[in-house]
Amino acid sequence: MISKAKLAGLRTWLDQFSREQSSDPAYRAWRKRFLQQRLQLGLQLAVAAYLTFILLELGLTAAQIKAWNPGWLLMASVAEAGLVACLVGVRSPKGKHRLGLIFLGSSWSITLVEQVWATLNGFAFPGLFSWTLVFLTQAALVPVRWYLHLASQVGLLTYHFGVNTILSLYPKGDQPLWEPIQVLYLLWFCGICNLSVFLYERLQKAEFRTRRELEAEQEKSERLLLNILPEAIAQQLKQDHRTIAESFAEATVLFADIVGFTQISAGIPPRELVTLLNQIFSAFDQLAEQHDLEKIKTIGDAYMVVGGLPTERVDHVEAIANMALAMQEAIAQFKTQQNQPFRIRIGINTGPVVAGVIGRKKFIYDLWGDTVNVASRMESQGLPGCIQVTKFVYERLQDKFLFEERGILEVKGKGKMQVYLLKDRL
Image (cartoon, rainbow, N blue to C red; front, top):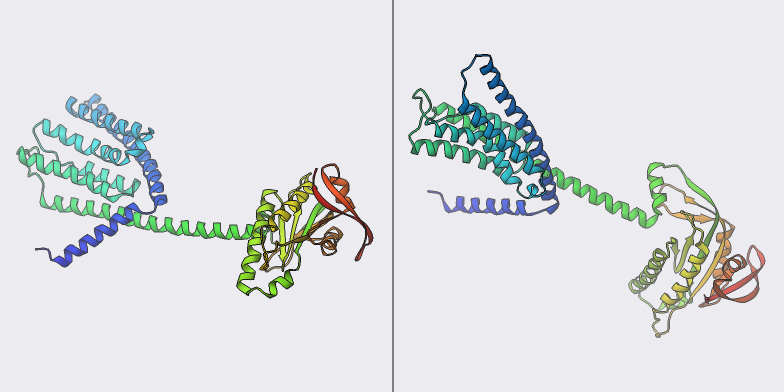
């Protein structure tokens, strides 16, 4: 008798097998496609191969080497028709949902059809040659779902031994239904085929999971890289490790700084401070994405964004202006500990810039040039809660936005400059 421990072990194995079969939908989808493709290939070969046997029989008959055997030709034609029907089925839209039945049908179209033919003719036919050829072909071409292979074998052997025993049918020439050495050979052959399919699928499943994990890690790394660099620059950097630098005839640069943040941060615990900055800058990031602008970096409580690069666009000045107004609305949603809304200074300038990536570690896509310096001065020498722009920006947007002239401003490194305050859209 089987012990309780063995029964418990068998139940555990069955539970684990059931979980493996029901887990990982992506693997099951892959296996389904694989099974359909390999079934189609196997059926094409089977149709062609079986046809050669039919043609050989006809040729031998025509050459008077063999006697005419209409019964065998009828059986072979039925088997060939079954294979063709399976081939049509596996190519049909409904066939992909019945791949298991098509697998069994393709196997039994050869093995069981000849058994039924032999039964109808009053004898048993142990077709060792055709059986092993079918089982080996199945294991080689369709090495998944080993239990389908086992079902095709068990179904055939059950019919052969069961029906022939019940009807007392034996091979021609009064041979035994099956010789012991042939039974042992067939059992080992079927066992090895099924084991090879089982081991192949386990290996394939492990490889599939590893590949999926690598793809997930690669996708994660790709997302992290795109959070640091623009997509076009990231692709260029992956292909070419040389210094990346481009000159743009015109781009619009925005600097923003939270007013009085140094004093505000003094009374906030470090964790809360970082959380607050993250919330504010995340809101700005969403705005940059909505306006199709490129965030460059944050420095402390300062935020830098640019329009017109790395992909050029004609409306970069207008897009930055809309971004600035939206940032003012967004920052007002955040309150200080005294329940006062935060305010920001914003400076904008437009003109030629150089952009690129330098260094070998901790890459950053950055901008250089006089345009960038002036934009920074527009912010640092601006007014709290205001958007200060240069004359270049004003001239580009005066027909679309409302401005207030601030006057002449002494800008460090540039001297006197006419500046304006962007108030609203017209």
